[in-house]
Length: 234
Figure 1: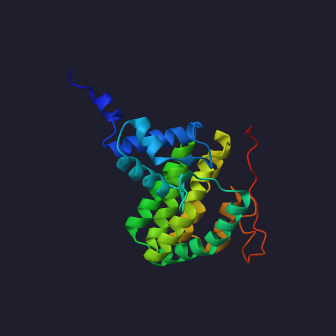
Figure 2: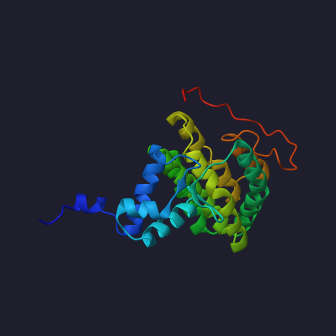
Figure 3: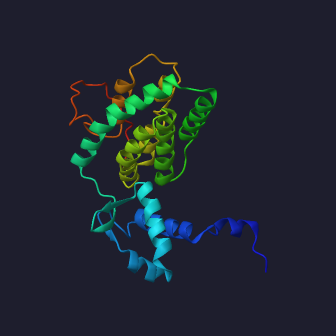
């Protein structure tokens, strides 16, 4: 019997993709909780496969920020304390603000159109929290890439990807997540050169919509205006 087109779409293209999907689902379902160790050998036995595709899948999840590699201890589901988040964001603010300035100086019609499309997709988002986090990260990554500095890009990738995974695992209402997704257009206008505001100030205001005191461990001593949050049950 020939599989229908709909069933073919459900079949992972590669074994690695299948393992990534299964592990990601296990993390978001709570089977693997933040801080849990992901044992490569045990997972391979569960899937009845070799360790190679498991290792590749864990590497992919690490790139996505869902998994963190602790030297000589192995792979663990991302777990960040409130202080970790504040410290990361305190470093992120000046680095990403620099990326925004460089992206604005190097902006092309193609990049502007790509970023606009991502913002429109975020404003129309109506899916899962993981999809929201992935789309949010894709937008910020596009700005980093537009900076033209690969070292800045790689630094931000390593630093910030776990933050998006951390937020994806956060239990918030659909309304709160939608509110956060709809606050990227100001950043878009700044990097497109439409707005004349300060990228660092705009970024700080943007981060304060999702984090408490993102600048706490930085030299910033300003109090950016905090947007009113929607009243919704968590």
